[in-house]
Image (tube, rainbow, N blue to C red):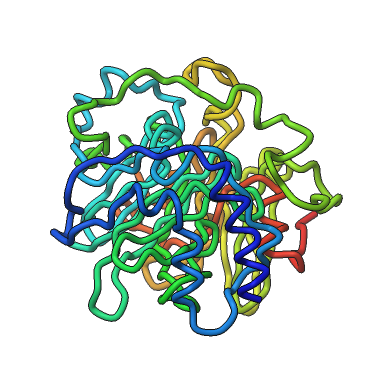
Length: 382
């Protein structure tokens, strides 16, 4: 197996463009490895330190054409308050929303398309927030394992057309989509997911006025430019090996969940028609709330002018000690049991349960091809 990897590594190293070297240390104070060295051998070094075979098929690893940290992650975030960020962000603009304890951070997708990874601390918890434009997916992870805080960067490699991360502490490689270490000393480890969602800026600031908007140090929000114009209607995913699952169009958007080993995908078209889907998966009740007023980050050159595709929240449907049943009510939702009004973020904004927050269920808004590639046995909701 290592010989097969070695052949692949020679080919990848020969055609990979260089990355960009930045500061001398990461946010935890740990010295970074030399990036010039990593450009030449990040795969080789990871595989040579792997005990046993790597966790992925080498034939599916491809060079994404950017080099190590050629897309620079945000290691030292600056934060804007709601009022400052609101001068530039438009109400329907897509943002990733992550809450840990009492703290909520917002990651505008106009920022994430330029950086893809943010090494952050939310509510005192070290978190890595990742966005893969090729998969249209945001996933957040706790970046602590066995007492070590890890700091992640962009490897420049793709696996099943998805971002492959590397950590600067061990140079192990990790898949963005499911948080697995697939090569290197941490092979077999898995990061814990922190629930996140893609919603509109209006929905985020309405429910979390004390939020912090994350931007690169000294850079501000920047323009709402999309370097992937038209990608969300592409017929063929970029550098995807094999044939996408034919059950849906490759870049159709879905909400994906895995509960008790059962994977389910809910097409956005279904959610747009119903606005609420409530069911039980592996014995766990869940509710999916859908907001159609969220623009695509991968449509037009200016994200603020892109078409509206929607965003979702997934939750355990209970609060105040009782199970709840939801129906759409204008832009919001109402529970039949108390008549309280709820937002797409699972927060009661009025009524007897005002101020209550539904427990989030980890989920992904993603392109179908990517969700199915990582979850081939997924069931598609009808």
